[in-house]
Length: 125
Image (cartoon, rainbow, N blue to C red; front, side):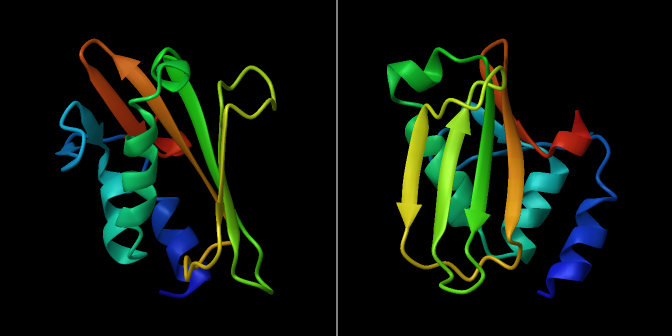
């Protein structure tokens, strides 16, 4: 999908009335925008990566997580990192050798709500 079209479509998500349960981590639910992103940008690997870190105590103890994927447009390599939203100190950093993710950068929030973890676009808060 073209990056400009993807950005335009993502901007339309400003809340969510439907949630999708993540297949690897059943207590993680994804908003309509995140589900749409995973399907249309073929980036289920991104939500899988975020889910996989929730088993680490230093990550799961954070009730608000900011996940940012930054893609180098020249090499198509990327970095996925997580902060707690209060500082730029990385709690997780994963180097990705190659990705065809269409955007140079995307930010997702993961918020603990009761027994669930809600993965959302910042515009859906």
